[in-house]
Image (cartoon, rainbow, N blue to C red; front, top):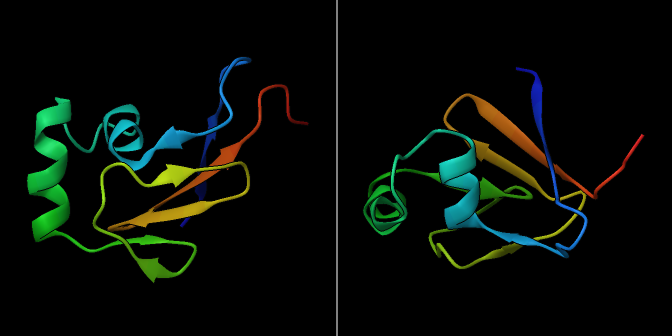
Length: 77
């Protein structure tokens, strides 16, 4: 299971879990986030999370099904 890197834009300090679901192509519209989170297990840093507004900062890990997303700051190396 390889990590998928999500790089924040230059002006972003964080993204929300709902945005990650869209970026990761787990859902197609923001309105689907609440429904998806109510019926699927999503782990943020190993803990179950169901709030679409949960802020994700650099180095946070999000596991959704068999995918792991790693949040990185803009310009990471």
